[in-house]
Length: 287
Image 1 (spheres, rainbow, N blue to C red):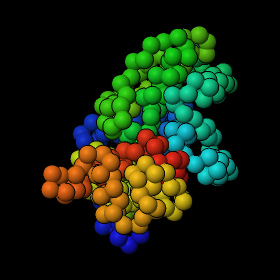
Image 2 (cartoon, one colour):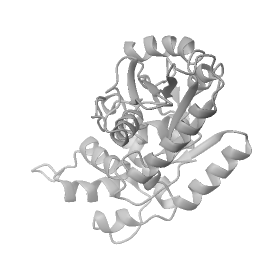
Image 3 (cartoon, rainbow, N blue to C red):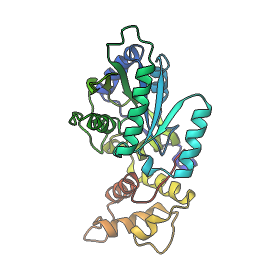
């Protein structure tokens, strides 16, 4: 891991800074914080800043989202460890109706059991997590179960949600409202393996990254997990450890070769990283 020691990124746009400040007050006022993490990195996708923000919350439920992209055995171990630490946890795919129905039942159970002074007021839930963890997709899916249209923009890139927004999820008693918040990241430089995991999962704008380093880390993670889908997808003779050999194969398959036979390394690296993010290289756990 020594070759990754110098990896770092610095991406903290103004909307994240202002939302983080607002969240520090908000989490003390809502009934529940939905702590949304990427299931492939349930420990790394909660930042120290988010932990500090969530520390003052009344109640908290972790949702390990994108469970369909995570290794199932590793995910079960992560859920068990988090529950052993006293944290309520639900593993979910925010696009899967059955998973969202299970989360809906848990939210309504907690709303019904709430000891609020004014029961006619809605049960409020703040949805918090790193960028691109799937927070907005979850809200849209939960609204759909309540017969409501999607109101939150979603996308495969970080930074789609840019301000705190309040939405009704269920109108029938017990009423539930959710606050969608921009992703939370620490200010300044983020470095080392933790930063690589966030970069690999799409929590950071790709244009700010050393994508070849991220692809190199992704290759290492796949090899350690003995996940070999990349070998067939990019027509390799077998597993490789050399990122340059990988990028050559990816470029040959994805149109990243120049007329002179040169490799567009950044383009090939991005194609490889996106394939992993989208689950095309098999399920994986990074923590």
